[in-house]
Amino acid sequence: MKNPKTTEKIGSPSSSTLTLIIRNSLITYLLSAVTVPAICFIFRWRSLDTIGTGFLYGSMGLTLFGALMLAGNTVPAQLSRLSIPKYRAPSLRRHQEGENDGFARKDGGTGFFFTTLICGALLFVTGLLLKLLW
Image 1: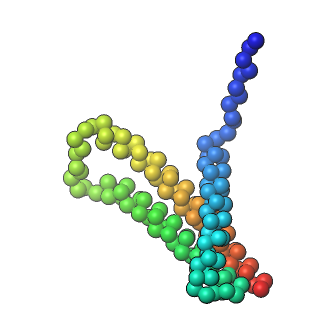
Image 2: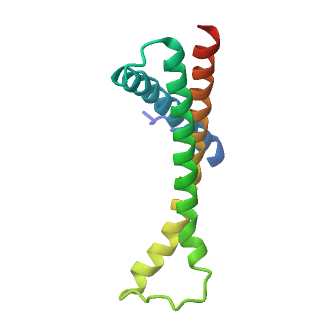
Image 3: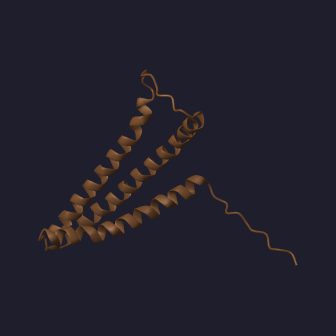
């Protein structure tokens, strides 16, 4: 008998990246949606209005954290453009691996930023709904 051929998934890398960002955003949102009310109860913010305020503060904090992480991620690339003498690694192989790894870190930083941005937007909308509806 012949073995059935496996079919490869047809899709672009950007499609899988977008799916990954959305999935991570939803997971982060669910974790944040549990954490924010827990913190609100610790600080004795027990009304829905004050919990909505907690969601608004959480969204701003998460978005600011993601933006600062993205800014910190671009600093090494900016420093490499300066005319400061560069340190030579003892091994050329490790130096080349480090250069190739820089692209992956930049894409990962951008993905993390968009994840925190989407999650922050969801938290903001949740906070607005809690404040306006109740």
